[in-house]
Image (cartoon, rainbow, N blue to C red; front, side, top):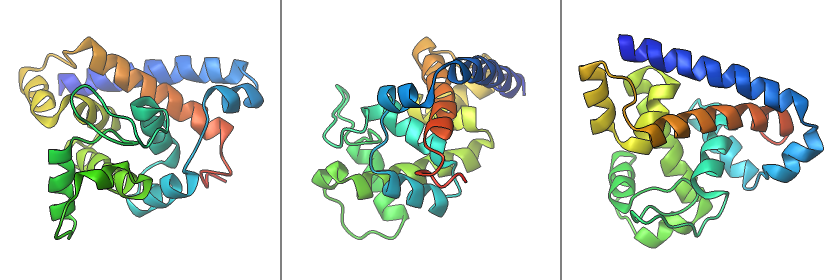
Length: 182
């Protein structure tokens, strides 16, 4: 319970700070600094998975800067930086009968799998901040942090959750029409 409280307070602090920064920048600057691509794909899969489209856009921006050919040192691929093993599991759990690693470079497939995974994590943990932490650091780490009551133990994961939360506000303000928020 303590971890959920700490995570909720951290997300609230970032949201307040992020709202102040966002309100002080003009929309044209936000749109230039934080581009949105594949908005139909993002909007559609957010709707299909009952996710906030601005949150999904923020995750894509932080993970890949909307580069479908992005590849991490750990081998994660595409817009939402999915590990092939994770994506294969998602494909099988969502009715797929084959999986091809190269498909992760396809924005439609990558965001379909990534949005499914994020929605799954949100249902599992009942909290967007914890879902983002698990998306970044893995479920095993979040489970251990919950068990130990230590909060998010990795500074880079805390920074990730904070940045996605801040950018969720940016994307909601800069792209309400494109993301179907109006």
